[in-house]
Length: 115
Length: 114
Image (cartoon, rainbow over all chains, first blue to last red):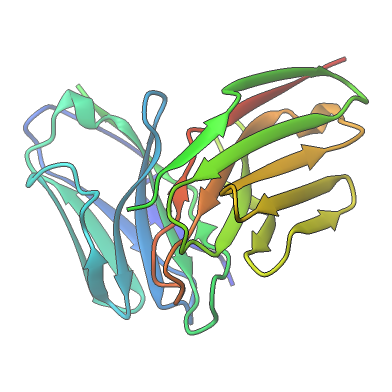
């Protein structure tokens, strides 16, 4: 398995533009997590899905952020409109259920820069 | 929700010495505690984990201890080597079921001095 695949690896965009980050979880995993990493705040859980259903989106910072998981093999995180303070590395991770408390595997991340 | 505190934020040790990183958590229902290592520009990767039904786990030079009563857990690295230099994150997962996202500590930048 190629692991969790994220695209793009790097994204530079202008303030106000829409940004879409993509994630393909490991095949067979049915939990998917979006994290944001910054120097100041560390790794923050934004949202997680179980069987394609959003379970907890309390970490999503603002209404400008939205996430979808239309099927078991694809998820998107969208920021509209983007702002410079959204600049961070965004990680997607997946794990397997119903095996209790298993490892979360991270993708390579998307480094977002909003100028 | 869960809150995880991690200390220290930076740790510098001489090569060959031991390093200890400590974390506390707030949710007494948390029952899974992994540790991740993140090298510069790379993704976090699991190095060891412990479940709430054990107090200690060891894997070669790495060990983790868990004190459920005090709600804290620690990572111990012995005989440190230059390749151990990285940022280490502790995490906790609560309520079981595997569906809850991990809550991470802020990370410890471990520096191994030659």
